[in-house]
Image (cartoon, rainbow, N blue to C red; front, top):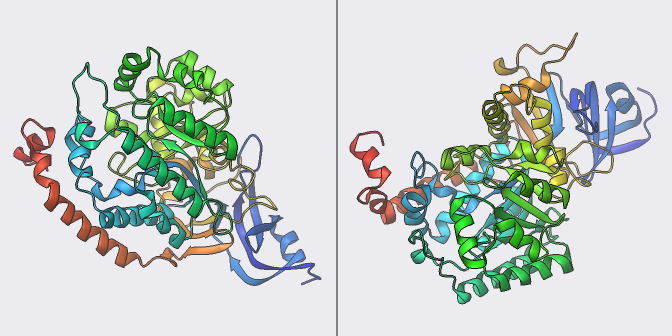
Length: 481
């Protein structure tokens, strides 16, 4: 009833709206509505006000539902997800599990695994994916087809797989031809995909690690970043192996070397920082660099809790990522929010750290800002892109929902939700999942294809996982695999 001033494409109404636009919190509107026109949010506010001012081509009644920004997964490797579950519970994750399988990956297995990981992420509420892989050109179209927002990088390095296992006092043998080939593919990816599909697909740069890329190639990538503004996603200070390699090759620790090259700035996205010192963390944060926390992967692969809390004391540019399913076994940010909070509470023996509202911000607005996307996504505000998810709150794990004298909505989202509550996902004003049905992907088909490719991969390389003295062989003999 009443005069309406604008016709929009969608009006979500009668629902709890979580805007994440509050500078210090989450911005809850208990009885709210959101209007969407084209690829943008046209209005956000109280239910009655928006119904009065907007008419819509489609009305979506959200009784018992929550509307919030789509989640931002700030670090993924979808191209190796076909060996999900094949590389856990071992002290030598890389050499015993990853390398034997990596050599047997085919284009088909990379594409199939990538699509399944993307589908899993969408169904758990992720709408923006920062994906870095070798051979990204093989499956960049998966993100296009799925309809997600994605920042894609082709990883650049010079370490041949066959020479990746070396002695403690040996330097990685970097090969210039391999570096140049990966750098060429990086440039091709940018030419073909950057700022495409209405800006939904963008590109970044990803030197794999400072110990696996030459100084000369890093300088070239710096120049690309300086000239075009590309972010640089970098596995940085990841472990003692990297520290030793950098000391042997350059006589410096990674972050000092990076600073010497002029690469420590707001375009740097540092992933993991597992062995970074307090001074190094303070320096990175002070220079405006961002950090990505991948709790599930780091815990499973290295039994490690990265220094995200330390970083957060100096900078708000902290995000979370699911990394790779050969590590964390999941591309579900509800899982990452919960485990990230729990591990830090345990590490510092302080249950007040990384409170639920903070973890939710890391997965939305703070994560978007860390990726340089905060002006476009991460919160529900007029003018921003219409990237949103709608969750069913009338499920056992989210019950009871109370408001007075305090609300339990945010703690339950982080500590009780598991992603299955997500009923609808919208990216760029287009619904890509509704009633938990993926609209741009044939879910059963991609599962069948990934299942077939997983079997083929083990036929090609499964015997290598059972080599003498490997943890995998031990578990197999004990009937634990």
